[in-house]
Length: 95
Image 1 (tube, rainbow, N blue to C red):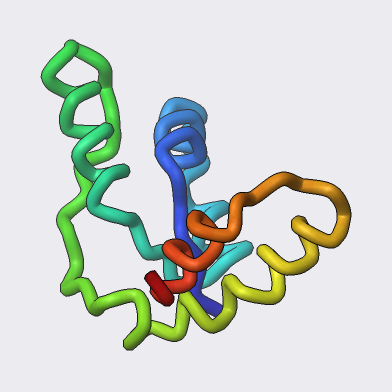
Image 2 (cartoon, one colour):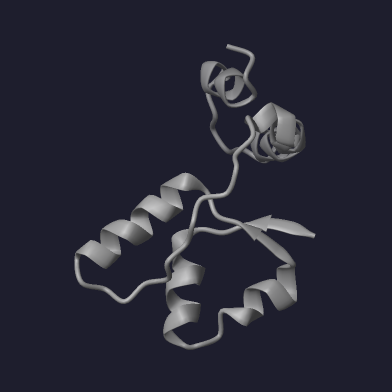
């Protein structure tokens, strides 16, 4: 299984010396560039954070992320979550 991680799990699990939980539970972890940048900013501010190297990135369409996102966006919209049509189209790359 391949998963994405935000900054918080990486930061707090490292502080607890439990980073291996991520890979044990989720397998391969992809860390987006924005998360790597946020961790670097934290390191510059004096926090002890994980050092992560960027992996080769593919456009979202090539990774299949956009196609997998559509059903979740549709479900949110049908359950009352407001998402404007232009934003919806932009998220799906139809703009």
